[in-house]
Amino acid sequence: MTLQAIRYNRGSLEILDQLLLPDETHYFAINDTTDGWSAIKKMQVRGAPAIAIVGCLSLAVELTNTEIDSVSTLKELVENKLDYLVTARPTAINMAEAAFRLKGMIYQLAKGDDYKPQDAKLMIIKECEGMLEKDININKRLGKFGGDHLLSHNAKPPVNIITHCNTGSLATAGYGTALGVIRYLHENEKLGQVYCTETRPYNQGARLTAYELLHEKIEASLICDSAAAACLKEKNIHAVIVGADRVVANGDTANKIGTCQIAIAARYYNIPFFVACPHSTFDPSTQTGEDITIEQRPHSEITSLKGVKIAADINCWNPAFDVTPAELITGGIITEFGVFKPQEIKEKLQNISPKN
Image 1 (tube, rainbow, N blue to C red):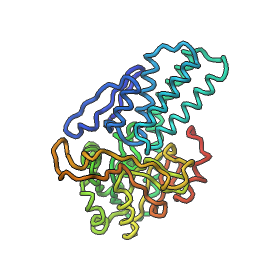
Image 2: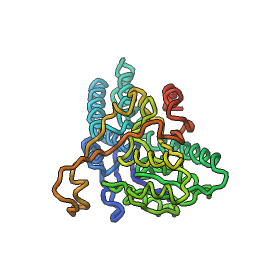
Image 3: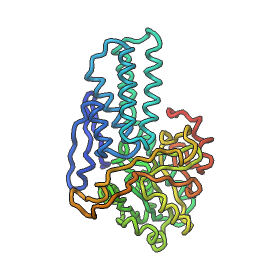
Image 4: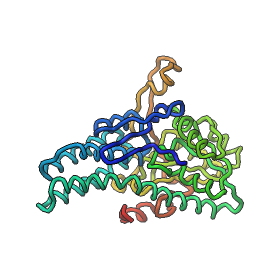
């Protein structure tokens, strides 16, 4: 049974507190966009697709429980709340993409006198609700494209894979991006061994990916971040597959800190490096990785572990993400529309409607 990180019924949203995993499984209520913003900022929910879904569903809950007297009032409220949610974690583009889409929708609804406030509000709520099922369908398509592509380039499966950070059910609505590809291979009995990094300093790999792999009964081993290059050399790895928080026009990709160094090592050992992400992660308005705003996290994430001090009192540099240049994404970018080379991603995706 796939892990469920998001529980939603109209007017009610609960999310799995990922700060407590794997020791404790605890769901808590999100009652409004303030709660949604806080959960995203604190990384109680994380993963670019899940951030957007929880952010938008927090808006849906707030709207459900708020009386609206005019469409113009609704428009102002929706726009303000969406702008606020985007500020929680600015590097991941999916929340900004969802905000842009919803603001376009409320703008159209408010243009004339065609809609009553309650009808317009319900349309926004339903649009947010639709993101849950849509995300699972997108990830399953993405997983199949990626899995079939890997198998077509490996004549003798099973295939062994390294992945970084967490990109599965806990980072999405319930199937996964990079872990969705892995799940597809496992379902078709074509997967060998998965190696997941610990993903310091937040340990998403050790706490979350390892937890998911065990839950799905997938053959896997946890490795230190510093063992990735050695693993690529020693363990007959067929591919590296990671997720993404933003893919820009030239194919450069922002992902969890530590991704770029794995891509460099994979290039050295001639192992294909793939990025797996939905169309909504593509940002054609940003030209190169140099233009991506990189979130800086608190020093305490490095100097402490679960409240226990593990480092000297030293200054820290703690970026949450790094940028992998397009030329290091040698395998391609896996999307729900196919697998593309980084240099063709803008041409392939810019004119595709998210509803396709």
